[in-house]
Image 1: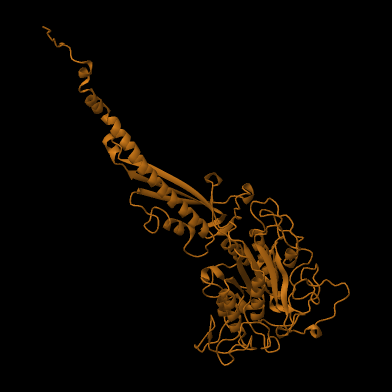
Image 2 (image 1 turned 90 degrees about the vertical axis):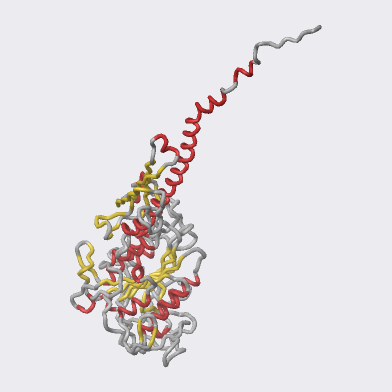
Length: 527
């Protein structure tokens, strides 16, 4: 008989009972710590990205507002985009938020590849600046980490942005300059060069030089602007600038017979080289300039002195190219160059504004913003002999008893605003610089006009309202009024209402240049 016997020993595996439970109990703190690490650090990282985004937004907004000459100033704008306020970028998970900012002047030549604009004097930084640094701190609460006594995580972020100084988009800029006799008379004691007062026209030319120094003739990636295929151009041009003046010079365009009013030029005289006219008018940039054969406004004059130029600087960081025709045209003080003023005719804007827009339209490039900058003392006082309803153009009077006439002899100020409105409707930005405009004038106009071309109030327009009406909106960006401090004409020291509060032409053109560019983030180490 076989007898089964059972071993008294338990299987080896039975000796391991309860060990897994013990291991779980032992590892539970580690597992909780890992959960705290993954969840709390993930939450902290998300919060940091929110803080960083708000800090960068504040820096960009502040940089774009550095040139502001009226509230809101850069500090206020930066704060409104920060994580501190509830305006735009506040987040409920960010607690104990702090915000600070500072400004600095960084030489553009130190970082030629960043396209940093030159330092300039602004209300927010009277010693000059072109950079803003924004610093933010905050704390974010934890969840699982509280078990280990960690209730919050500190965060900090820093961002640096330049003032407006980028190159997006490129610009086509047409300067329209008043060259009537009043601009060449007397001295503006509020505008000095090398300690000496200059004429209003010369002051305006120095202002244009300031603008050219801050625009970008070619891509920021190029150390030198390579010559282009035509005179006055560079390869891959960025910001291109042209020049028109009024009153106009003799023209041979279709529909206008002006040769009888023009002096016969000596053999070999330099002639204009534009599509409209290759025959009659000498260059303004001949040094010294030759006498200009001025044409009446109603004789289809030629306003264009230079079409688009991009060789006014050798690179985006160099000084002005004094050999360029554009510099010579506004090169007062250099070899007796510069715009010649005319005593022959008074002011009539509409033709010049129409010509400027026509040129921009005919030379339009997709992705390029068209800009007109007009500078004048603002009184459209040309009479029938200077204007005339036979003016050529396509901006017609649209209301009133003379509806349908193109640039009728009266209402010169109104016609200026209508021509500017036409240009604005084509997408062109118009900067209007009133230089010594009186608060009374526009003697050729009829009552019933207000700025913008609206009839019905029974009031006469004024030079101030005309210059304001030609500008784009908002006025706080596009309308400037500078007094002309000429003791011989005390009526021109008035500053027009509603204008940007700047009192020097150089600062006006520096501000315009800043507004034509964009703020950009730069490495923190630049500051």
